[in-house]
Every structure is written in C-alpha cells, then in structure tokens.
Image (cartoon, rainbow, N blue to C red):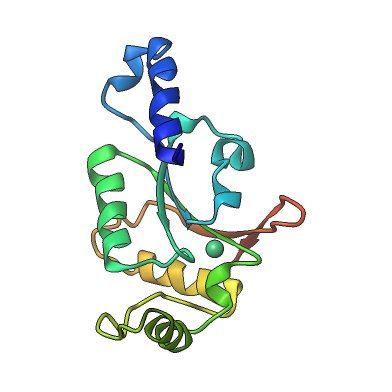
Length: 166
Ligand SMILES: [Zn+2]
C-alpha cells in the first residue's frame, strides 16, 4: 500500500472526530518562514505557540523568494499576522551542494538537461542567510514598518533557537 493510500484511509478516521469549528476563517498571529526539512515540522512544539496562531510558509533553505514575499504580504495584510519569524536551521541539506553542482548531477543522472539551470537557492551559511532574509523582507514596501521581522537558527542537535541580529 502506498503512503498516500494509507494516509487517505487514516483520514476517514480523522474526519470522524474533526471539529467543524476548525473550518472557519483562519486568524493566525505570526508568519513563520522555514525550511521544508521535516525536523522543523513540530513548530507548535519548537515555538510553544498554538498551531492556529502560526501561518507557516515553507521552502527549501528556507529561501525568501518572490513567492514567499507575496505570501508574507498576504499573511500580514489579508490574514492579519503581526510578526514575521525567519526560522533557519543547522545541518540544512541546501548547504551541501551548489545550484550548479545539483544541476549537473541531475542532468547527468536523468539524462535530461532541458530543465537546467534550475534555481534551488542553495546557500552556505545559515547566519548570513538569515541576515539577508531579514533585509529582503524588511525592505519590501508592502510589509508594514511596524511588523517586527526577526530571524533565528534552530539547532537540530539541541532543539534550541538562537536569534540572529540583523
Ligand atoms: Zn533546510
């Protein structure tokens, strides 16, 4: 049985106990941009905040792309979040290759170079990445000036967060 088939089966049990009140319009309080890495999935645990308060935007890295900026603008201006947290982490897979290296590897292993060059937003230093993200988000004219934009690094070995000063 595929993982998705198992999940669809499990969902029928989930739906039996589902609280329909959860379906009303979301009202998150904070936007969190973080990596696709599964070690960052327990954000209510990591941050000690209720799931409903978190508007989570995930990309590899994370990379603050034009899409992410658009989502942050919607999060602030439409959904009403009042703070932005950029949550980076140690041991990120996106620090283990460069875009050029991964493009070359995938072109070679698949035998098809037509999608290359693809942007993977690889990077080397989570601290520098965090500082650049803060600057990028802060400088967007549609992110209100009174919204705090802060960056942290999650240590995957200790579970601790460390703030990076812009
Ligand atoms: Zn990562």
